[in-house]
Amino acid sequence: MIEIRSLSAKLGGAPVLHDIDATIAPGRVTALVGPNGAGKSTLLAVIGQLLKASAGSVTLDGADLSDMPPPERARRLAILRQNTTITPRLTVADLVGFGRYPHSGGRLDDADLRIVDACLAELDLSALAGRHLDTISGGQRQRALIAMTLAQTPRALLLDEPLNNLDLGHVRRVMEVARTRARAGVAVVVVLHDLSIAARFADALIALKAGRVFAAGRPDEVITGPTLSALYDTPIDVHEVAGSRVVLT
Amino acid sequence: MRARAAIAAGLVVLIAASLFTGVGSITADAEGLWLVAVSRAPRTAAALLAGAGLAVAGVIMQMLARNRFVEPTTAGTAQAAGLGLVVVTLVAPGSALWLKMLAATAAALVGTAGFLAMVRRLPPQEPLLVPLTGLVYGGILGAATTFLAFERDLLQFLDIWMNGEFSGVLLGRYEFLWAAGAASALAFVYAGRFTIAGLGEDASLNLGLRYGQVMALGLALVSVITAVTVVTVGMIPFVGLVVPNIVSRLRGDNLSATLPLVALSGAALVLACDILARLLRYPYEIPVGTVLGVLGAGLFLWLLHGRPAHGRG
Ligand SMILES: Nc1ncnc2c1ncn2[C@@H]1O[C@H](COP(=O)(O)OP(=O)(O)OP(=O)(O)O)[C@@H](O)[C@H]1O
Ligand SMILES: [Mg+2]
Image (cartoon, rainbow over all chains, first blue to last red):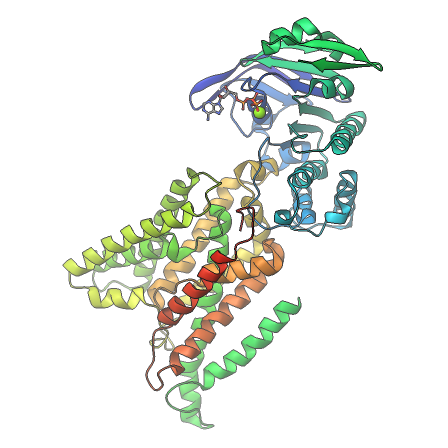
C-alpha cells in the first residue's frame, strides 16, 4: 500500500504538485491519468524518490520512502520513466538482469537468472535476449525496460506510459502482466493516456489536473463523459461496447 | 573468452619482443640481465600499466559522461593534470615526486568534475557535442598551461608531459604507475556499478545504486590513472577512446564482462606502439604519444565514420 499525504513538489523552482492525497492499494492496478503537464510523471518521480517532495510524505507499507536506504528501496519499489535513453550497448538480457541488482548486488545466481528468464518470457522477449539494445525496435526496447522493472520483483510497481511504442497485442500483454502482478499483491500504478485501456484494465483511477487530484475512484465513477470532458477541457463521450467502456473524442 | 585468450597470447609475444627490442642487445650475461632489469623490464611494465590504465579510465569516463567519444585526453582530464603539475612546479620548485603526483591528481579531479558538470546540460540527442566540448575545454586548459610554462621558462618540461614516451623509464623512475594499475584493478570490483551508472541517474537510482558515490569513485579512479600517467610518462592520446570503442563493437558495454578485454587490449596497443616507436627510426626513437597520435586518430576517424545508426554509436 502506497500512502501519499499532503504531497507537494517543485520543478525548477516552480510548484508542480499541490497538496496531493492518495492511497494506492495493493492487489489493484491504479491508472494515473490527466492532461499533458498535469504532473503525472512528477508524481511518479516523487513516489520513486527520484525527486524530493517540497512537503508531505510518501509511505510504502507504512515505511517512509524518503529515508529508506537506496538499495532497500529498490528491492521494494521499481519505476519505469516515461523516457529512458540507454547509451551503453547492452543486450536485452543484460538490461533485464540489472533489474536483479538490488537483490544480487551484481552477481546473478540461479534464482536471479530464473526470474530474468521469466520476465523476458512474460514480455515476449526470449528470442531477443541476446540482441543488443541498439539493434532492436523502439517497442521492443520499451518492453525490455518494462521487463527490467518486473525483474526487480518490487512491492510497488510504477510505470510511466509503459504502452508508448507498443502494438495492440503487446499493449494487452503489458496490461495483463500489470494485472497479474497486482493480483499477486503488488501495488501497481500505470500512467495511461488511452482511457479505453484504463477502463478495461484498471481497478482504480486517479485523475490529475494542474498538479491536483481532480478525481479518484473506480473506473465507472471516473470514466464518465462529464468528468472526462472537464478533466481534459474537451468534449468526450463514453460508450458501453461489449461490456467495456469506450472513450471517444 | 576467445578474444581475451587471443589478446593475452598476443601480449606474451609483445612482452618478449619488448624485452629484446632496442639499442643494445640482450646477452645471457650479467650485463644483459642488468639491462633487462633496469631498463627493458620497467619500460615494458610501464607501457602495460599505462595502456591498461588509460583504456580502463577511458571506458569509465564514457560511462560517467554517457558518451562514447570522451576519454581523459579529450575531456580535459590530462590537460588539467598538466596544469596542476606546472602550477606545483612553479609554486614549489623541486618538490617531491609524490607531491607533484598529488597536485596533478587533484587538478585532474577538479578538471574532470568541471567537464562532467558542463556536459550534463547538453542535449542527449547530440552525442558529438560532448567530445567537442571536451576538446575546446581541454584546449583552454592546455593553452593556460602553455602560457604559464612560457612565462616561467618551463616549456621544455611541458614538451615532455605533453608527448608521452617511455624512453626515460628506468627502474626507480616509473613505480608510481603501479598506482594506475591498482586503480584499474579497483575498477574491476566496481565494473557492474559503472555500467549501471552509464544507464543514467534516474535508472541508477531506481536500481538502488548510490549514484553520487559511484560517480565520485569513477572520477577519482580516472583522475589517479590519468595524472600518474601524465606525470610519469606524459600524455598518451586515443588509447582510452579507440580501445573501449572497438571492444564495445565486438562485445558490447557490460563492463562486468568486458573490462578484462578492455584492459588487456589497452596494454597490448600501447606496448605494440612503443615497440614501433623504438623501431620506426632505429636506432633513434620517436615518442609513443606521436605514434598513437597518428594511429589513434586514424582509428578514431574510422570509428566515427562507421558509427551504427540510432545515433547511439
Ligand atoms: N524542469 C522543469 N522546470 C519547470 N517546470 C517543469 C520542468 N519539467 C516539467 N515541468 C512542468 O511540470 C509540469 C508537470 O510535468 P509532468 O512531466 O509531471 O507532466 P505529465 O503529467 O507527466 O505530462 P505528460 O502527459 O505530457 O507526460 C508541466 O506543466 C511541466 O511544464
Ligand atoms: Mg509524463
